Every structure is written in C-alpha cells, then in structure tokens.
Length: 294
Image (cartoon, rainbow, N blue to C red; front, side):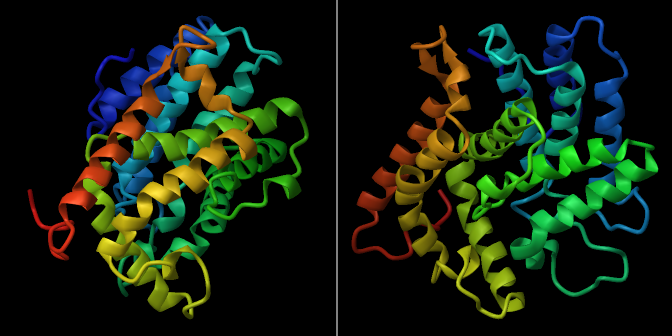
C-alpha cells in the first residue's frame, strides 16, 4: 500500500510528508514542510536554544519521524475518503507541527547532566506542550494556534483524559485523535518494534527512579522480559480499545479500499505481535531467550 520510507532518514520522511501535504493542498505553502522539519531537526540534534541532542534511546528522533510519517499518510487517506468534516489546511499544518514536537519533553537542557531524557517519561507530555509553546511563540504563532498544538500533543498521553480536553471544534478534536493514533501505530508497526522493547523498558526503569515509584506505566514491569510478555495484552486490551473508542476509529481511514479493505498499519502491528507471541512460546523454560540477540 505504501512505498517504503527509511524512518532513520529525516530527509526521506520529510519528502514523504511533503508529498502527502502537497497532495492534500496543491496550493499550500511549498516551504511549510521543509520549514517545520528544519525546526524539529534543530530541536532533536542540539541546535535549538540551550537544549542538548536527544539522548533517550527509544523515544529518539526516529520515533518522532515514525509518528510523523504515519500521521501524514493518515491525513491524506482521510481526505481521499472524503470524510466529513473536512480538515482545513491550517489545522492540518498545526497537526503536523504537533506530531513533530510531541516528544520534545524528553529533551534536556545543557546544564541537565544527570541520566537521559527518559527520566522525564512521566512528565514528558506536559513538558512537550510547554516546549511547543516556547518554540511557536518565538515563531510568532497566534496564541490560539499554540493552544491547538498543545491540545493535540496531550492526546498522546498514555493515561490522557481526552474527555476533559477543551477542543474548540470537531475538526481540532479529529486532528488530535489522528495525532494520537499515529503516535501509537507509527512505532508499533515498525519492523524493529519488538526488538526495541528492551530499550523501552530501560527508559521506564530510569523513569521509575525519578517518579517516586508512583503507580504508573513506568512501574508496571519488573524486567524487559516482563514487558515483552505483557505487550500482546497491551495491544489487545489497551491500544485497540484506545484507537477505536478514545480516538474515534480514525485508523480505519487506512483501510484500502476504504472502508472495508486491508489496513496496512494494523496488519504490520498484528504481524509484530504474532512474532512476539511465537517468541514467547519458544522461550518457555528459557528466561534469557526473549532479550538474547538474534
């Protein structure tokens, strides 16, 4: 359904996002996508203000690029399905900015020398919203546009209470749901998602040391293997429900042909989860197997 794009390559993801944006808005600003990718690249590579390059190993720049690519594709698929209400160009632009900035809360300032940005896992959504406000304020965005980006970023919180977010319009709410959907599917559909889960656990373990061991996602797992064992249930019992109920089932716009065709992203995630289930079965009696290099 989709041509392969190397999400390790910001230029490749930028080109794919530009193609989607120009496909949706042929008369749109041809410099918009290059401009916002330039901002994001500066932020994640230590070229913005007093921030260091990203040092979180799971929530790295590639993670953001995975979500951005997924969101650009989902926006274009929704428009192609002629969904109602249509999303205006400016709101789509704000959504793309939101996905590019949604994990800037993992960035550390230069005088922050303890640990990695993973220590901010519990607070990273609010930190990302604050970061976005600073950056977009410097870029002379209107206050209502900044709040819109912040609302969409807050849709990515694992325990986000979406019902209390004050979206001023149905269109903005839909765009926030698309952003939250893309954040989940972009990472879980990646070919190396299962192999990266031990790195995610390491981030959670670091975060737990800085969260006072409160009951939250970072304290749910006793080891990397425990996280791997619980991931199929996480997909079946949490993510699927969130995509369908909290995010209004916008993932279905990936169904090709729409509305009843195959869903490329869901198929990729299901294949990953099945591969993990097989690995779990093979690991019976071998506690080291799950995280042992292939």
